[in-house]
Image (spheres, one colour):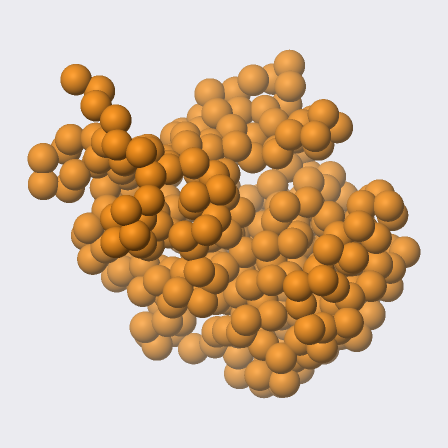
Amino acid sequence: MLVLGRSQVESLLRVDALIDALAAAMADFSAGRASVPDRVAALVPERDGFLAAMPGFLPSAGVLMTKLVSLFPHNDGVRLPTHQALIVAFDPDTGEPAALLDGTAITAARTGACSALSARLLAREDATVLAVLGTGVQAGSHARAICRVRPIRQIRVAGRNPAKAAALAEELSAVLEAEVRAVAGYAEALDGADIAAATTHAVEPVIRRPWLTPGVHITSVGFNPAGREVDDATVADALVCVESRQAVLAPYPAGSNDLLTPIRDGLITADHVHAELGELVAGTKPGRTSPDQITLYKSVGTAVQDAAAAALVLASARERSIGEQITLR
């Protein structure tokens, strides 16, 4: 069995290739060519955390895998990632365990890359100003990935901790051509932004309708069972797209409060979800229809994304003879 650590996974993943692989994977998923059940989780209420299992089979990539991912939001205070994961890949012909990969790096990369895919499909082509809400791993991943699909010239970073926002802005300035600066709050970051990437653990919405500029594309990947990132008015006014209707509308821990709450309160219905990303990729559903339209991609994450990323990593590792072979028997 091939074993790959985090630094090896990071060195093997290429953002552009990942975005393209995710487009194909999401199209397969929406067309019913992939098997991806809802995730299940064991709750750890004392730490507001959980351990989830996310199995998936992506035949086009030849990947049968499962991800085990923990979400422990208080890790931010002890300098550990809030999301930590392992991926186990199996031989799709025999079911034999074939590889063990760090899943933390894959989770960070595929989430940002799929948001970038949503921007490629839905954001205005002349989008140049990006608001990044949040200061963690996903904030950096989103900034780097979205800059690959749109001509971003200015990035504004906002978070609860001004020092962390400043540190992330400095980090991104060193690797991106855009002007990057930390700002005082979410409203300031969103003022005039063409794309907004919400990557928080917010209880109260960080995306609010009065703060938005016409035509903005919003990506929201944050998850908090006690809250949400996007307010009702934004959801109601936006063209809403998701990875999976079934997953985003499922009960906790699979679904999203950003959509479930306004549905529960009668402000929208489940039919307000316009399309899955795979339908946009395949052209079976239209995307943006006007320059001033607000578009929203609400992500909850699916195993098909992890499978697509794992396929790229494993192919590159085998081609370059990277990783350690171990025997379990």
